[in-house]
Amino acid sequence: MSDFSPLKRSEKMPAQHERGTTLVEIAIAGALAVLGFTGLYALYGTTVKEAKVGDAAAIAQQNSIARIDQIRDLTWNNTTSPSSIATLLTTPTSSDNASRISKEVISIYPAAVPQTLPLPAPTPTPSPTPGSTPFFSVTKIGTGTPASSPSAPGSILGERLIRVEVTTEWVASATTHQRQMSTLISKSGTKTR
Figure (cartoon, rainbow, N blue to C red):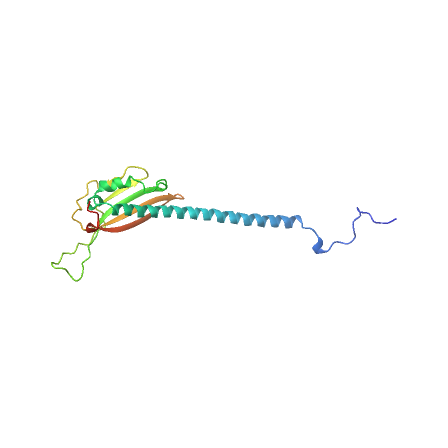
């Protein structure tokens, strides 16, 4: 009869490379895997957040450009009229902008007409350097009615050049952001009708 029994333990220990993994090694490997996946999830969350902020900024930029284009399409009398600018603000620039934009402001400022060389005869007087106070501003908050400030601005029909400033605000991640653009509009460069 043989002394071999399957239940009897061998006297020799298996070599190091033949041993199975221990519970401690499995726990450490699991912790490292969890840490790695947590880092990937955080990276994904940050990337999505940055993409949304970039999308909102692009919408605000498109809105500002569209407003400037709408103003350039007006006659001089309408461009310098607070009621015409208020009417313009009641029309959204596109369907997806209205929900993200919290405030729009269109301000009309005086602008200096540069002196030309050689001087024409008779020599015109150069325009004074404009101040930082607008002739008027029209503000629309959310989907509310646009309001003009001052309510009765002085006449600017005698001006030859104005600066139009469009400010678009939106709220993202509980922070208010702004996009501001401006352009010069000449009286002789607008529509006549």
